[in-house]
Image 1 (tube, rainbow, N blue to C red):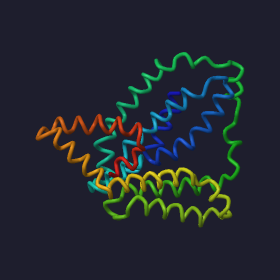
Image 2 (image 1 turned 60 degrees about the horizontal axis):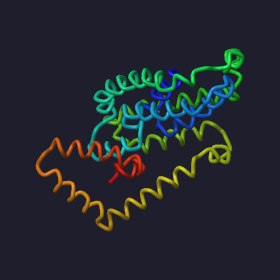
Image 3 (image 1 turned 135 degrees about the horizontal axis):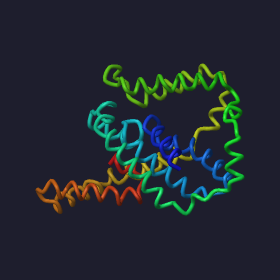
Length: 245
């Protein structure tokens, strides 16, 4: 679990946390099935680790991109200020997970032996495509960090990277289009439409005016209200449209 959490957190810092979970979750399910343990605690731990790691960079979480677009912060600004905090949180979480999920760490010895005998290289079906994908991913991450020099938005960099990989992969369009999470994209689009309607009807402005009245001139009270209110509402409303408005 510690290894999966570390991999998830590190990958979520460079990739979107949704993408990272989609990559790590199938591996987790396979390993848990092989060693005879419940996958639920591992998946919960990975979801939390992805949120922790995603907070470290401007591209790790979609709300980070929204915050950056409104504040003008760069890739390195996010990393320098939040990286150390995220590292401490990740270490604390791994220690806490050892306590919370201690009852789910009893594995089948025979299953563990079978997993240890697996050769991960056999799962790679197209090694040249793997190296091309890693090279494009490295270029995209470098472009993210050079935002102040290139002056390209993360969305543009990601689309350029996707286009470059499509051009060099030589795959048929139906191969990679089938892997796009259309349901997730439509889900986010619908949420943005709903939140946008609240803005147009004046509900958001009314709520903001009410918060100003409640907090008065106290900045600490306003900060605590926004902090805990955001945490509570993000459990009900998706955090992306919530941050956007």
